[in-house]
Length: 246
Image (cartoon, rainbow, N blue to C red; front, side, top):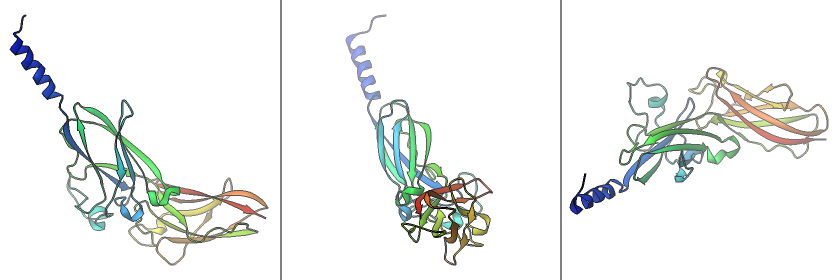
């Protein structure tokens, strides 16, 4: 079959038009496991969007904004597809100019203010030119773990036992208290020398604050593990601290 020059030119123009980049917005929200959105309160989550097939970085940045409405997220009844977020809820947004369908991997690492407690989670899906992923809550990644930080620094050298006082929150910074929405009585919060017995940490009277005394068997160098565990869903956070006993 033969085509005239005008037809060929028309087909070429159509192909060029079809290959033009179309702005495509992707909104990423990071939800702390069994809690709220990870945002400004804990330094946000670092988001990286990559082409899953080539590894090319397409966009990156931090989630920013509020943790969200507690009753709406944690207790209010909702119907299918009801959004948990509002205009102030933490998110990362990027507009990509893509000319063809791309398989994109979104990776979230955080919370960035508590890097010792940071975890990473990834998800991959197809993205079509001009077909934005920004409806409802957008593309939501669930970040497991607990945020654990020392309140009082460990002594440079310890003997006999080491006093320990830590702050433990959900990854969004949400507080843990006895009988609260995030109930300290239902979590196992403890510390142990590596390969040693776990010592439960008790609530210290302030939200998210726990304390205890960890026995040291003999002089030497140790790694102290402090962890929080929720037996109802397996959510686990752990931070390691080096210490030296005389």
